[in-house]
Length: 126
Length: 126
DNA sequence: ATCATAGGTAACCACCTGGTTACCTTTTGC
DNA sequence: GCAAAAGGTAACCAGGTGGTTACCTATGAT
Image (cartoon, rainbow over all chains, first blue to last red; front, side):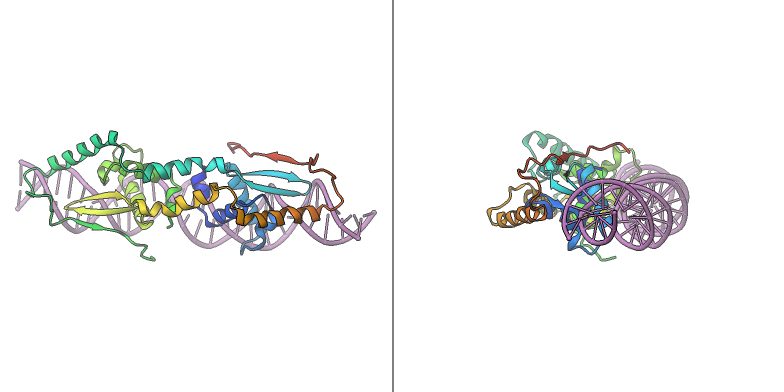
């Protein structure tokens, strides 16, 4: 289970937030939640396998601690995607534009493209 | 579908990377991949519903463009979790430490805790 | 010694997900 | 006008996910 998949569940994200200030016991982590303790246990196992938490066994208690290093791939992807197109990639973009141009060669004189419609799909509550 | 869930799939992450330099057509996005075009279509719909991409219809082509703004919640969570414990939260940490101390009152004199074992679970290839 | 507490595991279940093939519509090229 | 290309949708299927209850072990408190 990679960190991305582990972060996909809102419960797990919230568990991580709970551990942010410091290690937490399973009972404490389960306390406020609507779901059962075994469910929390499962989520913690997922987080552990993703490397996002480490466990410290203290007697009968297990203290789960956030392991920030496993967030690195996520941080990296986000900055990679947020970053403006690097100069070195401008060639590729240029090529793409030229290829599209070739596809619709002779077509619509200016790029104002009357048929072009940009749509942002909004969660249609299906 | 929230952006976190959308990013959980490696194919979708790669699709986003493909769109990073600029908008891409569905055929182009499907080209290199092992999966069928309808499968790509489905992934694109998921990305669209998460707000991570927008579509520009150009005749029979649909150009999918990365929408960076939808990445904001992800970026925020990561920095929230990576950030060191803010001074204002130190009280909570303190309280937690004190509570644990109360729990094992009279117990183990120093904190060197012989029974304490920190374990980092590594993907056991189940 | 005994009882409560912490917490993991197993078995089960409903539902979602990601993939497929088949098919359909619309636009474009000739 | 007609064939090809772009791409969405439907129906279907296997497998994963998240939840539950029941149960078990181990540690700590009295």
